[in-house]
Length: 231
Image 1: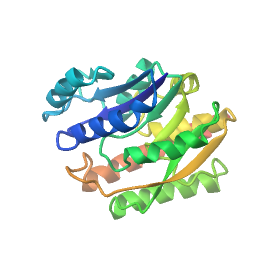
Image 2: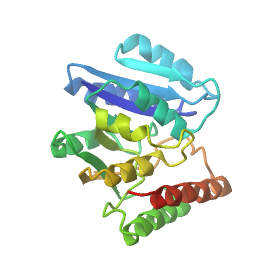
Image 3: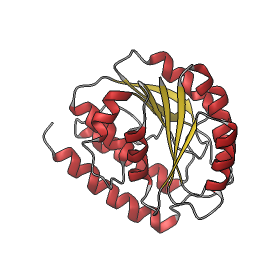
Image 4: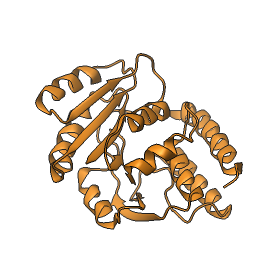
């Protein structure tokens, strides 16, 4: 069985393309598969679009937060509800497309975590610098040799993922990074695969300008607090 877990917040301009392409090109590779979308109380028409798509795609499951809780809690909620023996975590913004999945699947050996490494990343100066700094600090601290720890596109054994997620803070700000760190703590092998990264094709980020800087500072404190915990 296979599950895609994907949080969504105000993505009415791109969510239909994301759902259609990933159900058509990724879910179709498996006989028993589901796409589990967690809408984080969107204020646009994302929920309406997802409700319509659910009628067309029976393997699409939609969870809706009654309050805006943030990306981390939404991702954890989806992980908790997932049923797959194999689970793909991803974002809804189509910056990594469905063609990136097959290279990850090829590297999957049944027990390891396979994570994407974004090539040609163009997310704007602040995001690129913050991501590079986080990667460098974790490598220098001896935590990881992974080059892109906070990439949202990761493939996990399902039971392993659900166990790791149980050890994360409920209101985590950096779930992708903490999940990888939790896997490293437990000695799980991490494999990394280069994938093409696009500029956001349409829509806008939910954390522009100074809001991203505030978020990045809070996330960094959370990561370093987690890193200080015993392995």
